[in-house]
Amino acid sequence: MLLLLSTPFANQTKATSSDCKKTPPQSKGPFYKVPSKIFNNDMTNNGKAIGKKIKVYGKILDNKCKPITNASLDIWQANSFGKYNHKADLSRSRKDNDFFGYMRLLSNEKGEYNFNTILPGSYKVSKDFTRTPHIHFKVTSKQKQLTTQMYFKGNKMNKKDFLFRNTYNNNALEASIDESFRNLTYKFDIII
Image 1 (cartoon, rainbow, N blue to C red):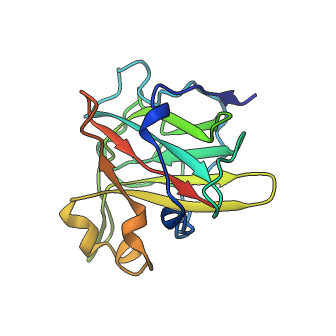
Image 2: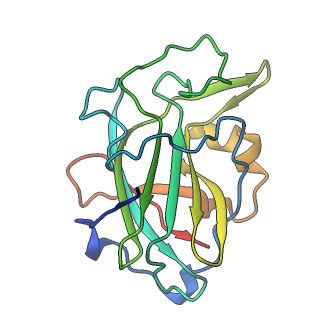
């Protein structure tokens, strides 16, 4: 069962034909798993998760800026301490039993999606490499599939992140804060 969402952000995501360059692909990394449960659009367990609460919204579009209806979005991320809810994450970072970390949604008839989560923490990959905060997306439509990552615009760690730094058109991977909302809300359109 997949959750089809309507969104209160309908007038917030207008794209122009110049905006519709394909979102760069990114690695799905070692912590991808198919969500075992389909949650509503809230990874925070009704606000119980530890960390700064944020909202993410956007549209799934094709390269002609047409919305893609019923696109499946698998979304996953680390908790606020930088730990994934995945058996392969053997780091000593703190677990948060109230943070789901994985969800699956469907875009609505206008290609829109939205969800509540927390600002993910950074985490060490090796002695010399720390990942900047990011959220993973795997988007599947009838004809196409894209795996990518969303980064937070203005985070100084982005420039040091190997995966972000070595991606063409990496500014398309940075979500901006939408100042028209009272809470921390980020806009991230995905073009597949």
